[in-house]
Length: 194
Image 1 (cartoon, rainbow, N blue to C red):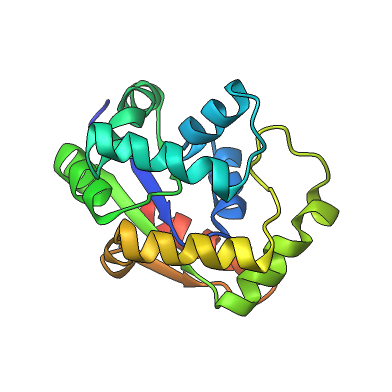
Image 2 (image 1 turned 45 degrees about the vertical axis):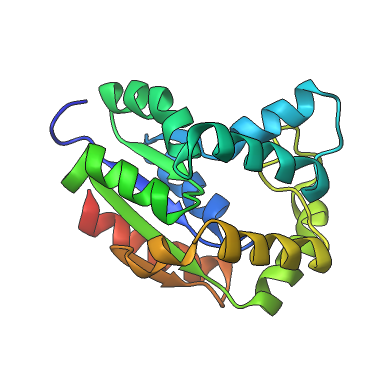
C-alpha cells in the first residue's frame, strides 16, 4: 500500500444504496471488494439457493471460526492487493468489530461512508431490483422480499452490532431521494476524499 491509497468502506443495511455508490467508485478507478462475496461464493459452490436461510449459517460459522471481525480478516488479502495498486472501495462493512480491526490496520487511510434509507424505502427498492437489473450472476443486485430484508436487518443489528460503524462513519448519506440525488451526494463526498 502506498501512503496515500485509501480504503473507502460502505456501511448500511441491505437496500440502502451501497451497490450504487460502489459502482461510482469503481468508475473512478477504485478496486472493488465486496465483504459478503465470500458467503455468496460458498453458497454457489454448494449449489444452494442464495437466500437468507442458506447464507446466515455460513456467516455465523465464519464469525465463530474467525471471530466477530471475520469478514474484514478474510478479505484482508484482497484489500492489501488492491491497495498495493491504488484505492479500494469496500462494499458492505458489516460490524463494529470489523470497523475496529480495519481502522487499526489502515488508520487515517480508511474512510467510512454510512448510507441510510428508511425500511419502507429499502424494502421497496429490494423488491423491485430484479425488474431494474435483470439477471445478476454475482448477486450484487439481488432482490429480497420485505420479510427477508426485515429478518436480515434484525440479525445485522442484534448479532453483529452494525450500528457502530454507521454512527462512527466519516460521512453519512441519507438516501431517500432519486438516483440522481444519490449521485450528487456521493460526488460531493468523493471531491472531499480524493
